[in-house]
Length: 386
Image 1 (cartoon, helix red, strand yellow):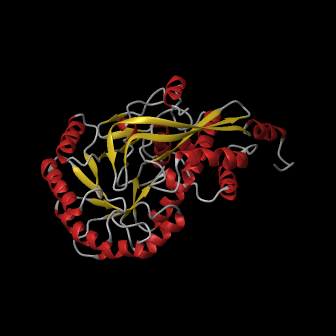
Image 2: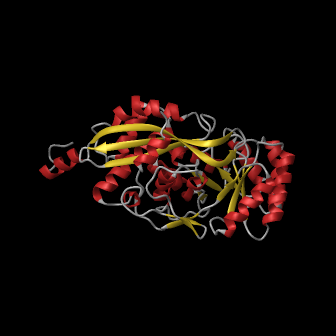
Image 3: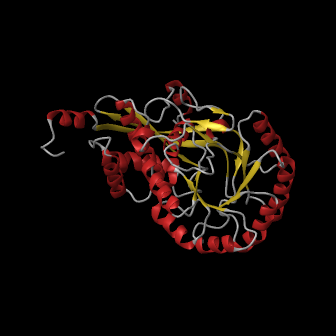
């Protein structure tokens, strides 16, 4: 800190100093099995990060994973180990409002580990927001919306159950767009399931499909036109993340529905490569991929400059992680595809005092300072891993 600062600035620097960083693994059961192409889960695991400042303010952040290190290289066990041993020591003593400096320090301490870094950075934004009585969105440029259209994911693999589930969500006016997870079954079975869903929900709902990298280029070339004929409006990551050129070839084929890039975009450099390849119509934005709220803004800026649509992705975060996403999503000028932060609704319980509000097909930006939610200590003890 330069000596030329006035005395009150030195005092502020001391007050905002990061005094402590703690992490806890949390396991929360889900209301039903959530089946992806490469795994299925009946409980969702998180790492909750708590940052305490010299002024006594505490901030929280959350990192999520799906079934261990299958979606990315990070597991909750690895996240906690790297936060405790490397990321926390890297930021201790730093002013909490020096967000970019914290990012540089964490990058120097550990390569990638984007989800772990996102949890720490979120906790810093939360603590600074609480210190000044401001929502995290205000520290990111200010909100332009107070709610976001939110979809629901159908992922049991049972089309009859999924039609019933979708009907309940429609009747409750919670969701009218549904993302269907495919790739766990044979492509022919997936197409039959999708035709069943498309017929049953025709005129009542919009369908998106997510293959989670399960198909190769040949299977994708066969299935994508079928999905377009069924009225599917968007298909997420049909081919492996490494095959950006293949994604571009598929996008150029007649009859291909709009394509959503997910696992192939972890940072702004990845986003630029997708832009140059003309490989996607939209990109899924996630804190766990982009290493935090600032990383989301950087990736979104590259996509916006190229005319690529923005989609608010999730990894079944609780209200903690979902609230953090909503803070940054609320600041994006365009969010054409809405978001999928239904995570709190698929959990059997939560560890916050007031869960997010879902109504009229939207999820609402929480009010209050920081990310807008607070930990319920009793519930946290119930779900915390011993």
